[in-house]
Length: 63
Picture: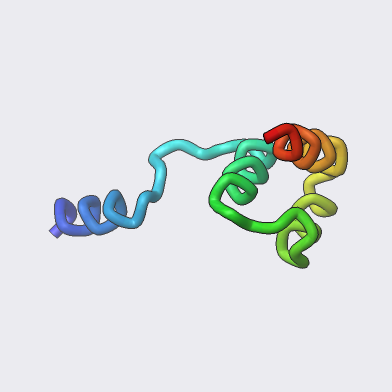
C-alpha cells in the first residue's frame, strides 16, 4: 500500500524536497498567478518578499 501512496503523491507533482519562499513565489508567478492577486500579496507580505516580487515583475516585463 505504501507504493500506491508514493505513486499518488508523485502524480500530484509533490516534491520530496522543500523549496524556499522566494522559490515558491517564482513558481506561483511562472504558473500564471498574477502578482497583484490577494493570495500572492498575502504570501509576499508574510515572507517579506516585496523586493523579490518587484524584481520578478520587472524581469517578466522584459519579454
